[in-house]
Amino acid sequence: MVNPIESPPEPPEHLTDPRALLTGYLDYYRDALLRKLDGLTDEQLRTSLVPSGWTPLELLKHLTYVEIRWLRWGFLAEQVPEPWGDRGPGGRREDPWRVADGETLESLRTAFLAAAEDTRGIVSAAALEDAGGKGGRFDEERPTLIWILFHMLQEYARHVGQLDVVRELADGAVGE
Image 1 (tube, rainbow, N blue to C red):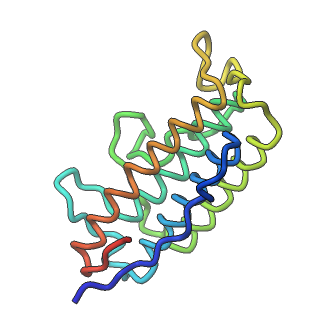
Image 2 (image 1 turned 180 degrees about the vertical axis):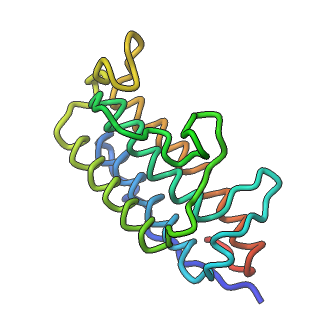
């Protein structure tokens, strides 16, 4: 039996403001991510069903750090203690994603929602044409805020699509 996962509504079709469209779709995918995790057991959240080895909890933590890396460390150039904190021991970019035994869906969801709220505040205070700060993630080549938001949007779309497949393999639930 296939159980549908109800998708949140997309931003309105008549929306033409780039900021509202980008932030609306980011929120759409954030919500879809959390809905696809709801109902999975702790074992399902911590078990990989794909050859690359990532788990649904690791994906949630990864997307939390995507928000932090691109907006706080990247755009604002803040000094972030562990910009690759979603990675294995040593926290290097090339390390695989990891979730510690004590981390739970609830603790990771809370961190994810806080990072998303930080992003909303950063985006609302800046112009889409503003370049990222110097000295955090970027030095000479600093992308604009609009580029960063488009990059994040494609990353969310890709990962939420991957989670669609993992969720269907885990319990038969499919996204709309």
